[in-house]
Image (cartoon, rainbow, N blue to C red):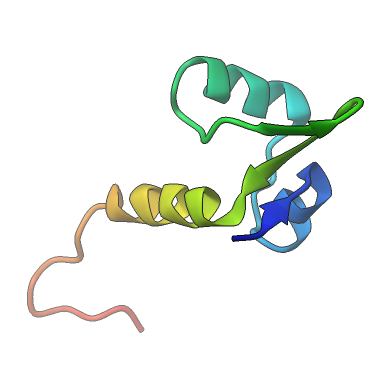
Length: 70
């Protein structure tokens, strides 16, 4: 299990959201909850972020049958 800081969300996971937007999503139950790691530092569990990304990808509209992305 690994922890990701805010910078890691952007650089390693490609999540372009601002801190404020992530905070709003968390409060609305639409993003994994942060983990306090001391002082003013927080992080997110990488497994939960990966699951969230997979869930977002699953929301995409399926490609019409018989056609492939090129």
